[in-house]
Length: 257
Image (cartoon, rainbow, N blue to C red; front, side, top):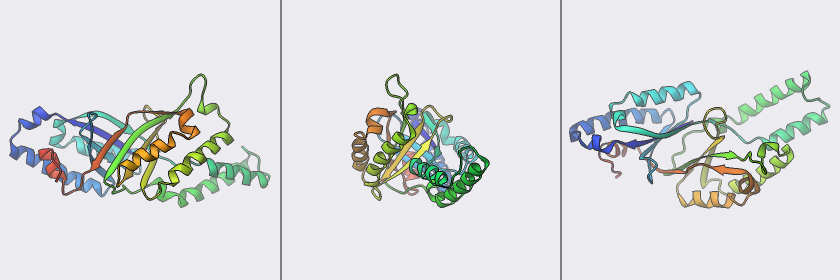
């Protein structure tokens, strides 16, 4: 996943003739519409943190790089400046399945680190990858609103997530997940990992038809032990989905129908 947050260079853009603005906006809209079929979306942002948010889903980093370069070649790109960006990889929380694997392998008498263990683990992971492919490679949701934020698990002097025993982490994540399940069908949540890829450890992207559901979900999760004790949050970015029909007008005139 690549999130690109951009701000208009408004003075330079307004100095162009309406005809030039329209021509560049139509060209960009055509490219972005085509990219939408490859799992890209455009959001008109609220607040001072940016004007546009481009969100791209691709199968690999090469695909993300092609998407980024395709946009940078557009003439309209000279009139946008990046406020921030975020690179991450969709991942699934596997605490429960990991505990199940260890229990199952233990019952079979397999020793961790043995050849038999490694072979059985490879087979199980291959099976899970196939079963979970729709979640690992999600389609871009078509909800009206999106909310993105990065987050970490604390590693402070008193509380350190990475020193907590696995069983305790699994319990807390299970309780955390149960809150999220209450919003299934209301909020689409995509968790992406960014350790080694960007400044935070995870990115969270939420999609919903009602933006108040973001607030309800995140507020309720604040009372989970895993969030209240161990979570640290970055800035939040909220935007409205821009349809293909609205793109030319938004880019040319800064207005949505």
